[in-house]
Image (cartoon, one colour):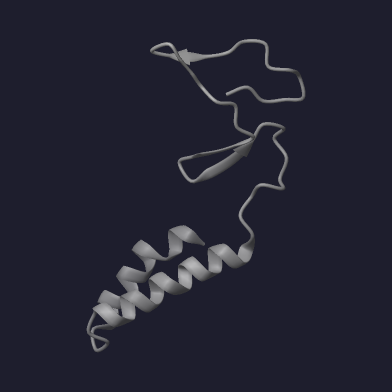
Amino acid sequence: MTSGKGEIIDQFHICDAPLSVVSLCRNLGIIVSNDLSRRAHRPTNDIVSKAYQRASLILRCFVPQNTSLLVRAFVTYVCPLL
């Protein structure tokens, strides 16, 4: 990945197939833009809606009487998003 404001000089190939040039790349959940700006980061609403969806799924899948299980599931599956 080439980053910065300079022009791309080389064309990269895999098995004689040219690789396309992209302005955004997601790697391990982190979005990196070619100019390293912050405009490409996910808005807060996207993060909160994914966390809400996972929390709702946890409540639907597990028995609500077992609060320790609910807390462990929340910490494991929802907190890493936040």
